[in-house]
Image 1: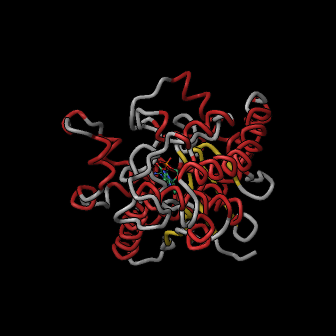
Image 2: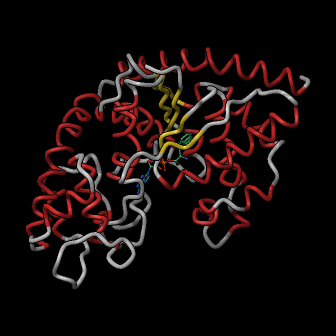
Amino acid sequence: MTNKLIFSGVQPTGNLHLGNYLGAIKQWVKLQNAYKSIFCVVDLHAITVPQNPVELKKSILELAAAYIACGIDPEKAIIFQQSDVKEHTELAWILGCNTPLGWLNRMTQFKEKSGKNKENAPLGLYGYPVLMAADILLYNTNLVPVGDDQKQHIELTRDIANSFNQKYGKDVFTIPEPMILSQAKRVMSLRDGTKKMSKSDESEYSRINLSDDAETIRSKFKKAQTDSIAEIYYDLENRPAISNLLTIYASLADITIEQAQAKFANFQFSNFKTELAELAVEKISPITKKFNELKNDTTELQKILDKGAQNARTIAEKTIKQVKGVVGF
Ligand code: TYM
């Protein structure tokens, strides 16, 4: 166990998919044994796009259940709901007053999420990365284990922390580093190997959800995009779809992409896809089973989140006190 702390989070906006699992949560399960760990259900981030309140409430508890079903142990790691610790919004405001618009204008996720009508996008969506910086900096986080798509936000967090420390002449914030461990750091859509696997893709066949049953998983892999070259080999640039499938296999099997490529070199696509689907079923079914057992025990889940919030608050209160002090409040 090191003294270093890791912090990460997922938005409670519906089903978790294989990208969330392989890119982030599967790594957290290993890391919780080596680091002080905090895993957040980032509900304040979720409302930067429209949410149905009844669904959101359900999704928050379900995400806590999914963390545990994937292997996060609430006895080892802090699991909590972001809006339960008010210091996140307090620090976000203070950091927002120290973040130039130019930095936020560079954030690619805002450009993607706000779509064509930027004038109608809410302020919260624009300020989203500042809230994420607050999440990370509140806990003196050393490392942030995430998928590739969050790297830019962590770089911004570093810039915000450095400029704040410099402005007030004090090392108030620890400078965090992104931790991108997984070879599946960017899992792509099963329908289009050039697009990220995402909760918001309108095609259910683009992603494997952790709640999918075995038949659904098999059928999604069967229909997964391939290309016209008969051989199976990894070439991310020219063969994104097949490279994505090899990456998913390697990551599920805990082997390297080279090993996966060697294993399937003489396979036909259909046989490779069958093996991939069977491995996915083997790895995902126990998670789904555990998730289904846990998700209805809302009293227990709420208890875990309450205890997590209490523990998170102890750290967050100290940081915000220090920040308020240097700002002059
Ligand atoms: P979110 O909810 O979009 O995704 C949660 C985690 O899953 C990873 N991920 C992927 N990894 C590989 N391939 C994919 N296709 C894929 N899709 C998603 C993400 O990189 C992420 O690690 N802003 C964050 C949540 C957040 C956060 C934080 C994270 C809020 N505050 C502080 C770390 C620290 C987000 O929207 O993640």
